[in-house]
Image (cartoon, rainbow, N blue to C red; front, side, top):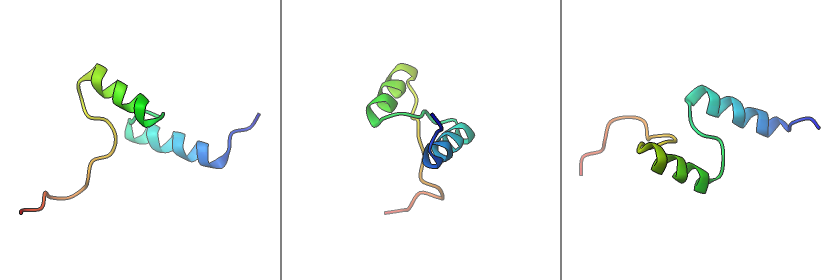
Length: 49
């Protein structure tokens, strides 16, 4: 069974960024196990309030 273009794109993106591929619950479990934040961070400098 061939993979969809969307899934291939998602696999490429997560591989290039080193982020886990899975559901939000899976990502949260990985963060808890590793003790580090996974996923994308906002780019740029923090806004002053």
